[in-house]
Length: 386
Image (cartoon, rainbow, N blue to C red):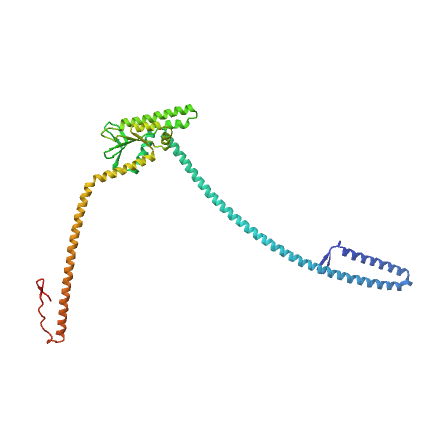
C-alpha cells in the first residue's frame, strides 16, 4: 500500500503502475546515458543537457503526480461525505423500520393477548356448559330411573300435581291424599261448594304405552302400541270413574291428571275416541297446563261462594258502619256548636278586657271627672251585656 496524504493507493492501482513504469524507464535511461558518457567522454556535454531536460520532465511528472494525488484526495473526501450521509440516512431508515416493527409487534402482542383472554373466557364458559350438560345428563338418567318404576312414576305425578295445586288454590281449599267413604285414597280433593261439590283429581302416567308408540318402527308395531296405549288410558278412566265419583259425597265428575304434555298431546291428536269415552264417564283428562287453568277457575268459584256465605255478615257490618257514621255526624255537629259558643265567649271576654283597660288608663291619669257610670244595657239571654 502507498499512502499519499489521507489517500491510500494499492500497488495494483493503475495510477501507481503507470507512475512506477515512467520512473523505471527514466532510471534505465539515466543508467544508459551515464554508461555512454563514461565510454565517450567527448560527448559528455550534450548528454548533460539531455540529463537536464530529463530532470525537467521528471519534475513535471512529479508535479502531475501531486496534482493527481490532490484530485484523488478531493474525490476521497467527497466519497467520505457521501458515505457518511448515506450511513446516516440508512441509520434513520433503520431506526424508523425498527420503531414501526416494534409498534407492530406490540400491537400484535396486545391483540394476541386479548384474543387469548377471550378464548380463555370462552373455554371457561364451555367448561361450565359441559359441567351443566353432564349434570343434566345425570338428572335425565335419574329421571329415567324414576319413570321406569310404576311406584316412583306415580309419586312423580303426585308431586307435580301437588306443586300445581299449591300454586293455584289456598291451603284450606284442598286436601292431598284424602280418604273417601269407600276407603279409596284420592291424590287431591278440592273442596268446591255444592253444586258441584268436592271434586277428585287423580294422577295417572301411561308412560310405557306412550314410549311403545314412540319406538314403533313398523305399521304393525305402531298398531300394537296404539292398542296398548288405548287400553291403558281406558283402564285409568274407568278406575277413576268407579272409585272417585260417589253420589252425595263428591261431584258428579273427576279429573285425571297426566303429568306430561307430550302424552296429553298424543292422546288428543290420535285417540279422540278415548277422550270422548272420558267425557261420557264424566272423567276429564288434563295436562299440567290445562290443570292450572281449571284450578284457577275453581279458585274463582270458591271466592264467589265464600262471598255469598259472608253476605249476611257483610250487611251486618255495613249497618254497624252506618250507625258509626251517623254518630260521628252528630258529634261533629255538637263540636261545631261548642266551637261557636266558645267563639262568642271569647268575644265577650275581649269586650270586657277593653273596658277594664280604658278605666285603668283614666285612673292612671287621675281623670276622675270623666269617670261616669256606664248606662245599663238590656239583658241578653238573661244576662246584662257589658
